[in-house]
Image 1 (cartoon, helix red, strand yellow):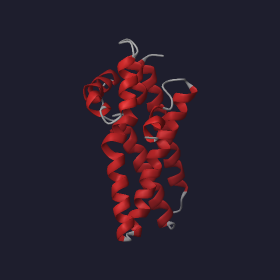
Image 2 (cartoon, helix red, strand yellow; image 1 turned 45 degrees about the vertical axis):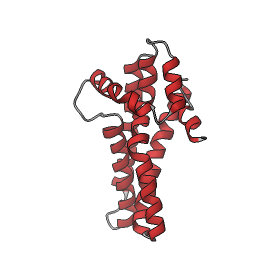
Image 3 (cartoon, helix red, strand yellow; image 1 turned 60 degrees about the vertical axis):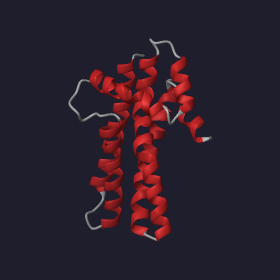
Image 4 (cartoon, one colour; image 1 turned 90 degrees about the vertical axis):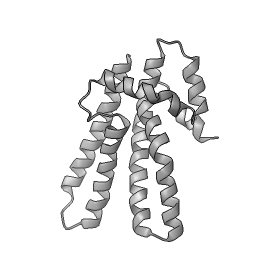
Length: 169
């Protein structure tokens, strides 16, 4: 499997999550405002995973997307020593596959996830239940996307469990 095939699979998974969530949203009556709001937030986060995590709405060729992300890769890897070590141990011909399999999730983890977890902790401490509600949905949706990507990586033996090792430290 090439880096572009790996990328295409992750994009397809993300688009499918978006489509499934949009279908759920469309089925909720407009009178169910709170439920609609929750599913709108979830849908927005799946879209965010595609737009920010995989850059799938740039209009660029996927090769360009992967190259742009690769230019930021080493900076992001410093926060994930186990992943960095694994990447550096690979043959140069294997590195693009590793990158394609992990780049979207790595980007979202290093640029978004920690900040949002901190915001939720602050909202909890302040007793801001509306903000906690929204952040729980957002964080839950992004984690669900991570789980979908990880399930694919496991199923295809494409560098599974890489983030699990980082989270146990």
